[in-house]
Every structure is written in structure tokens, then in C-alpha cells.
Length: 156
Image 1 (cartoon, rainbow, N blue to C red):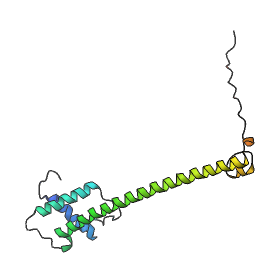
Image 2 (image 1 turned 180 degrees about the vertical axis):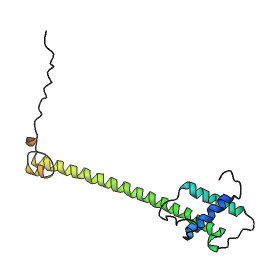
Image 3 (image 1 turned 30 degrees about the vertical axis):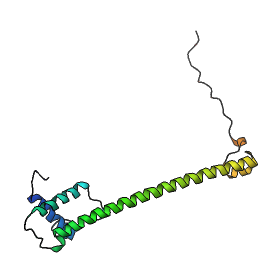
Image 4 (image 1 turned 180 degrees about the horizontal axis):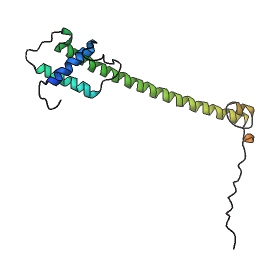
């Protein structure tokens, strides 16, 4: 709750007034809200509290039908439906991504097996083995031994 206000709070009503002005795009209530950004869960919760406070008022009727309690409740139900739809589509996208990753790994394993088959048939030193991305053993540098650095301490 805002500042310990219980029930109908003037600060909440003023916030609701500013919100309606912002949604309507007028300059008196502030600048128009960015409609492509997600609202914070805190803001949605605060909006729900404002709607609950207005619902508790007896005899309140909005002068503008676009902002009536029924209209606001319908908009809130639409938010819930869209969130459910979003979650379902996100789950479907995640499942599709998992399927794609599985297919990519299966493809990669098959290509590795194909390379092994080429080497098994034509040999490691062949140009065909080099054509499939393998290095010929004769072209590898032989390992060189590193010499340990000598200590500069004189022998006594």
C-alpha cells in the first residue's frame, strides 16, 4: 500500500488519474507511456490495488466509459489471457529450439562418422582425407623437447 493508506487513498486516485491521462496521450498527465516496454510486476500489482479500491467505492461511476470499472476489468482479463498465450508460445518455442539442437547434434555426429568413413577407405595420408578437413599425419610438426633453463648458481 502507498504510505500506509487503507482503502481509498487520494494518492492512488491521483496515480490512476495520471495513468488515464498518459494512456489517452494527453500532455496534462505526463508523457505518453512507451507501449512496447514491459511493465514491472510491481506496477501491475499497484494497478490491481487501485482497481480494487475503486471497486470498493459505493456509487462511483466513471464519466468516461472507456475507463469504467467494467472496461478496466475486461482489460485486466485480457492481460491474463495474453500472458497465458505468451507462456504457451514461449514453451512451444523452447521445445522447437530443443528439437533443433538435437537435430544439429545428430547431423554433426553423422558428418564426423562420414569423415571417419573417408579415412577408413582412402587412408590418413590421402588428399581426400585432407579434403574433408583432416590433417595429414606427415604434415604435423613433430613434438620438440623443451630444455630446462640452466640455473646461474656457481658450483662450489
